[in-house]
Length: 152
Image (tube, rainbow, N blue to C red; front, side):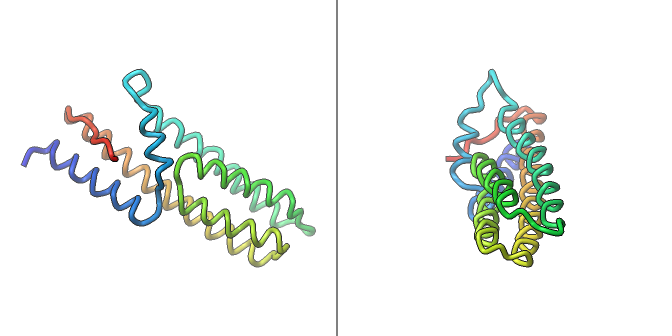
């Protein structure tokens, strides 16, 4: 079988699994639709910005939760920002982890918040590695002279 066809099939299967397993939602599809010849790296750039920002947010959250007296309003503000940015790239499981986290902020539950931070870090790390794999597949398809299949 042609190498390009094989890569494209792998890409479609992998992308399908990301949606099926709840890592991505339709917002990611919307992002992909904004990418065109004039801006071929749009999705990668937006996603990289998300990961840069969210790394900072994760550090801020860890610091905030280690304080003697936790400022839950500040923690909640960070989580709210995280939820918004993960939502904008379609990182569904990261967004869901933020929703749970905000509930613990409202309850001012320090143990719950720390558990949620660990969960958020896990989902964030998983999302990052899944998208890196996806982008690597895209690069392999393009390098082989193929076109990346559009997911609908």
